[in-house]
Each structure stands twice: as structure tokens, then as C-alpha cells.
Length: 87
Ligand SMILES: [Zn+2]
Image (cartoon, rainbow, N blue to C red):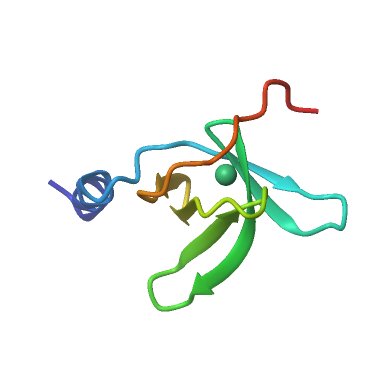
């Protein structure tokens, strides 16, 4: 097993199993579309190179973490419906 395979297993073990789309909001800010929910950038951990995202629909408390091309959703449920259509 090479390093990349080990890394992939490690990520899946920690719940990084969702693919996402990279998007920009109307103000040009970074957003991510994960499972039809839109997230705004919250912070970036330079050490682990992970990005933290907050649900764009306030005051929803749901959030997500991304690492490279995979996303992990946190334990908080959204308090609203997901997008039906993405424009
Ligand atoms: Zn939400």
C-alpha cells in the first residue's frame, strides 16, 4: 500500500466521503455545494490544509470540512430544506 492509498483510507475513516462543487456567491466569495446545501467559507487550517464551511442559510448551524476533493459533514442537521434546483 502506498502513501496515497493510506491517506485515502484515513480520510474515509474520518467521514470525508462526499464530493462537492466549487462555487462563488454573488459577492465573489468562495462557497461549496455539498449534497445540495450551500456553504460559505469559514476558516482554513494551514497546518492540516482543511477548509471549514458554514451553511449559507442563517441561522442554520450545520457545517462541513473539506480536504482536497472530499467533504465531511458535521453532526448538526440542517434546519431547512436543501436546494431543489441549482441556478
Ligand atoms: Zn443549513
